[in-house]
Amino acid sequence: MSQWIEGRVVANHAWTARLHSLQVEADIAPFAAGQFIRLGLMVDGAEVGRPYSLVNPPQARPLEFCFSVVPGGPLSGRLAAMRTGDALLVAPRANGFLVLSEVPDCRRLWLISTGTGIGPFLSILRTDEPWRRVERVVLVHAVRLATELIYRDAIEEIAAARGEQFAYVPFVSREATDFALSGRIPNAIADGSLEARAGAAFDAQSHVMLCGNPQMVADAEAALVTRGLRKHRRREPGHISVENYW
Image (tube, rainbow, N blue to C red; front, top):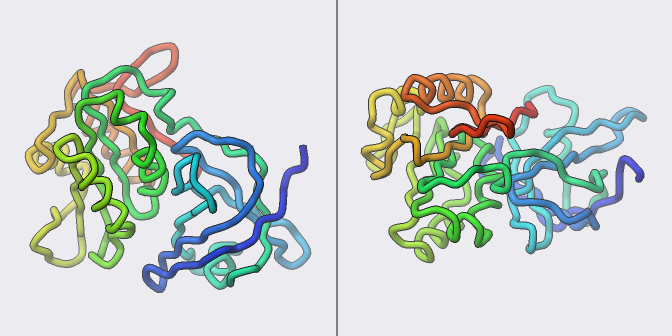
């Protein structure tokens, strides 16, 4: 199979000067919620590709990707400048193991993210599987500024549809708000304030999926291990799943 197929931009939404959501029409193979796919462009005569999580659920089109512009990066700035009808390269198949089929049975599902790491979790939340499998789902999203709390309308729709089965906990670290927790996620895990806000526990009946800033992922995993949870492996089921493709 070819490394790339052609995609066409349907829409480009700027949440902030740095954060964008790109909608793309492309005939990719079926994928699982939570997976990522490579997008690419020809830059100075060479193919440049990077992995981006799919935000849309598998049954929905167009494909949607959220990303932040990396200053001086070869791809993200160019993607942010794309307009409706522009062509780009799309890998024909998605990859990744941050999917519910890899999660063992549990009562509580924690989806913990920073920045654009919320993308794969929105894909998962807009499928039926988590709501069939667990009693309670907690979505955690940490950003620097309140304007970076993206997809609030989609999250409100999920909350309205799922009621007490769903909780959303935002973190804002660089400005005061009257609705979000402050500070870092790992500290809130350690001191119990995240559990108190969510009304759910980190215990043996929980599974935690982490996606976002590599330092947050590493520190949150360490804080969860201190609480008695362990990393999940196929040969040794545990409580913590992590996607590393940065």
